[in-house]
Amino acid sequence: MRVCENVREMVGTFSVEKIMASLTLKNITKIYPHSGDDAKKQKKAKKGEEPEKKKSNLKVTAEGVIAVQEFNLDIADKEFIVLVGPSGCGKSTTLRMVAGLEEISGGELYIGDKLVNDVAPKDRDIAMVFQNYALYPHMTVYDNIAFALKLRKTPKDEIDRKVKEAAEILDITQYLGRKPKALSGGQRQRVAIGRAIVREPKVLLMDEPLSNLDAKLRNQMRAEIIKLRQRINTTFIYVTHDQTEAMTLGDRIVIMKDGEVQQIGTPQQVFNHPYNLFVATFIGTPQMNLFENAKLLKEDGQYVVELNDYKVALSAEKQEKLAKNNVAPQDIVLGVRPEHIELGAGIDGTVDVSELMGSTVHLHVSSMGRDVVMVVSTMNMTGAEVAALANGKPLSYNFAGHVCHVFSKETGINLEA
Image 1: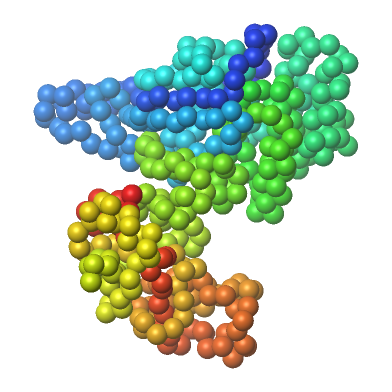
Image 2 (image 1 turned 60 degrees about the vertical axis):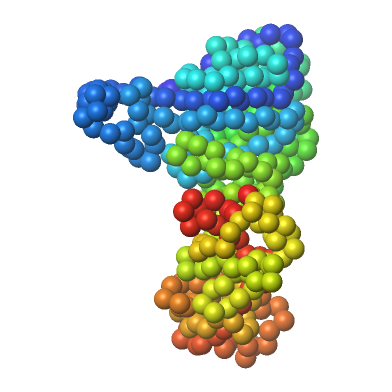
C-alpha cells in the first residue's frame, strides 16, 4: 500500500502563503547507494582492481548507481513540461524528487524562490497523479476527490462545491456515487486527476497517467488533459515514454537517456533540429532513417550531401549554421525522416513491404544493402500508381537539402548544433 501512503504524504496540511509555480532544478542528481556485492565490487574498483562500469545503462561509481545526473531546468509559471525517454532513463525518479518522494542526492530544487530540498511533500503545494490511479477502493468517487480537502479541514459546503466543479470539468458527475471498481480505466484516471486538481495545487505532477489505457482511451484522455490545462492555472510536469504524448501535450520537451538530459526544446525544435542521433531516432514515427555511408562535401563554397552518388545542396539555413560552426568536409551519418523522402530519380531500391494506411502508404525499401522507410501520400495518386508500390516492385527516391540532418560519425552530435 506504499502508493496510498505516498498520497497521504502529499495531501497533508499546507501553509497559507502561496508561492509562484515556477520551478528551478539546478544540477539535480540522484544516486542509489550500493548494497551487498555491488559495494564490494566498487571497493575493488576504487583500488584500481576493476574499472568503473555501467549497469543497466546507468553509471556505477564508488558512491552508487547514478539514476539522474546533473539535471538542469527552469520551468516557467503555468508551463507544461514533458519528461520523455525510454524506460529506466530517470524521468520518474526526477518527478519523484520534485514531489519530495525521493531524496535529492545533490543539487538544488526551488519552487518559486524557495529552496525545497528538505521540505516535506505535504508542504510543497504540489499534487501528483500516479500511473496506477492510487484510488481508495472503499471510498466513493466523491470521497476520493474530497479526501485531500477533508484532511485540510475545508468547510463542507466548499468541499461540495469544489468536488462538483472538478467532476463537471472532467465529465464524471454521474459517477460521484460509485466506487472505483465500478469504473473503467479512463474513468478512474479522471477521478485521480480530479482528486489532484480539486486542491488547486501550484504544481501538478503526472507520472505516465495514460500508460494503462488502450489506444482509443489514450487519445481521448490526451485531449481531455489539453482542455484541462486551459481551465486550471497550474504548472504541469508530465512524465511519459510515449513520444506522441510528449509532442502533443508539452510546451517544452525534456528528452532523457541513461539519467542524462539529451535535449530540451519545443516539440517543433526537437523534431526539426534534433541535437544528437538518440533524439533524432527517438522523436518521430516511423523513426528517422540513418545513412552511415554518407559524406558532407563542399563544392563551390556550398555544403553538399552525397549518398550513393546522389548529391544535394543543403538549404541556406543549414549552410549558415555549418559555416558558423566551421564544419569541415567529412564522412557523416545522414538522417532523413520517412515523410521527407520523395519518389523520383535519385537512389534505386526495391519495395520489401508496402503498408497502405489510407491516405499514406508506408514503404520498407531495400536500398544500398539496408532498409529504408518512407511515408508516401496517396492523396493525389491513381489506383494504378498505388498498385505500382506493391511488394517486390522497383522504385527510385530522393530528398531535398532542407530535410537533411547531418551528424558527426564520431560523436553522434548534429553538426548544425
